[in-house]
Length: 197
Image (cartoon, rainbow, N blue to C red; front, side, top):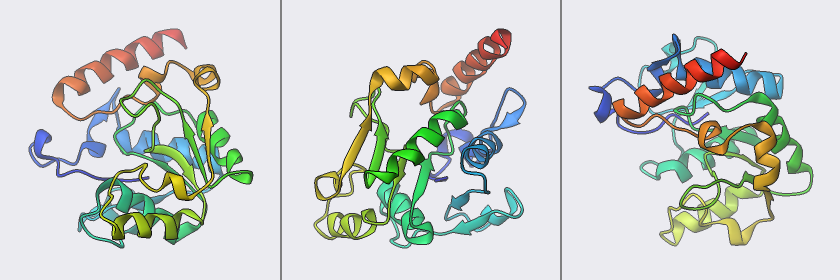
């Protein structure tokens, strides 16, 4: 899981530590990843107190400083080889979707779900294999920090939008909490989800 951002919109409180539905977003993501993969996830974070957030999780600081999301992905791949990365501000990503992404690595280096985002895909909820590490380092060396900038150099498989829908509404699945307004919306989404269960 990738913990990024400067927490400026939450008065210095890291956004993954904000609660949605009475639980920290971080704990929701940890549970989804552990359920999907059968093991505790890695935490990619540069905060000096990151090891205290969830005792027992292995914490890795970025191997390339100030490289944004792509640096977080690189760190995860170099630490673990094959990984499923999830941004720590996505409270509603289900384990079943994460398992599907991980399973896709048998035939690809990147397995990425399609969505209605500006890129059309969700690089911070995707699976990455070992071949991504040199491709990411090459992208950074040429000054391309985009989370999808290295994709031409690896085998990319998209999880089609129709398949993603089997796991839920992409606008909810990939919703991320960046601002207090987002947090209010996440609480509303959580109430709606709870009422369906």
